[in-house]
Length: 599
Image 1 (cartoon, rainbow, N blue to C red):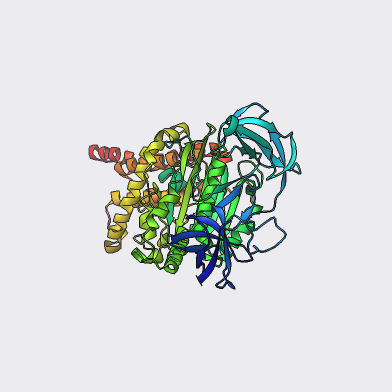
Image 2 (cartoon, rainbow, N blue to C red):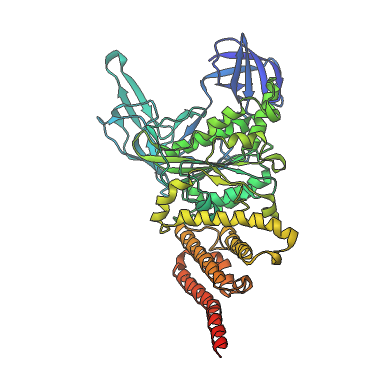
């Protein structure tokens, strides 16, 4: 074990004179409390260490000990259903109510292990050698035990089924022959460096969207399963609430929720609510498929910088089990602020906005680890990353937002005016985009919406025309607009109220399935067709605006749930009858005029 002596310290950064070889990014332990740190710079006989815990009380002369390995976390079956801090130290399930200084991992637990191999089997890296479940027999997700990447060989021995500790040796592999032979001991859990992406066989093109349950996202701005999305928005626009809604309603197998630098009261709400929620897909507690990593704004700032790497590493671990994982990071702006603060301590020259010059590359390192992949074991898994951004004053041209746009393909811009009008989700349809949208047209055909691309384009066109006409209406008045433009405003308002607005307080409306979204889109498209035909037949926009079915269309998201889809057919029939009634007089008028002339 290499050692060094502290000579200078300022906040989370210290300088130490080394007494042996240290490596860049090597994990170290500082002082008698063994505070966790990482070597970030080596110059001659001096190392610069970034400490991930509170350094109050440290002084020159204290010893620094190197671990001989990079900053790493232990990955295993004890992650699901738990709450951790930014360094993956337990905030739940431990005897203490607080993270103790120098704590590095959760206590060892016992679980039921079921072997999936026998002596003599050849195992490659990343394959499953057993399955882990709860020791007490409680119902929960059975997890795979994986051969770590870079390890493989012939099974020399394997334990029988039963209860074992997480870190106990369960399987022994032998690789090589003669003097080159090596033995590898496998446990239910293994250690992996957080800054190193876990290897895969190959990356796959996007095949389907991640279903979020939010209509404006799924139908207008979908993100690929294994894709990347950014959620920028000013203060009070609902970023955290939207991420929580996505965590509750998306179709991912595992949720990794990262609270990075957020206010403690917001994270307290998440920690209090999530354990009480029920997974709508399985009926089991939602926490059974959730990992929460909480690194609030009052925690050591350097740990915030490491928290996103811990979160993405946890997500990759479940991806390697052939699962689809959704990672919600709230927010990357607070993470970037931690980079800026620590960079100033290092004495580095600031870049744009005071952020370090390597901000862009660090963002790329994070977002590029999201992908749909073929795992080392041959299964398909994915990590979808959705990162919230908190630009000062809602300025999307600031560095974190502008750099993030280079690496994401879905951009969900939250609008302050929509939020102030209590319009949620407050996603602005004209500032948002999804680059992969066209690729999902075949998937929507399978969901029963063969005209999805046409309807999507039509909705966005209506919303764009509405923005232009509203500027004109503020000058000359809405009633002075031609009838065609008044109808455009009416149809755009209906799309906003009936489809884009979604109530989190409604049991039916908080999550919307793709089948219901497809039906609602087609119904609104039919209304626009009938309204344009009625206008062409002489009906006035005022008559269309007073149709009895209009109120039912506006409330169909809350009134008709996923278990009552046949009611949409009744609503469509009512729509046809209402338009038939206003079309009849307009058809009769020319005949009446003809009769009068002959009379």
